[in-house]
Image (cartoon, rainbow, N blue to C red; front, top):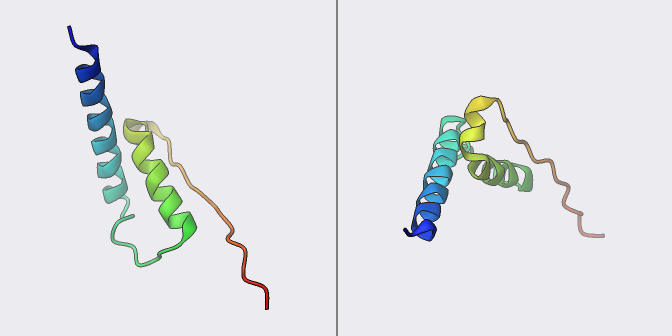
Length: 68
């Protein structure tokens, strides 16, 4: 039996569910392009089905401003 093939299918389905959750939350239609929005979208995709059992990942990041 090929466990690698089954594992790959599980990972793909997991990520597709995460993409669906991110889409339902409107993360792909938002006009805000910043570190926090991108991080939250990525973490939501990685969380996959956990999004539907109450996980609501958020990322808050600070990018240093250039010195004047």
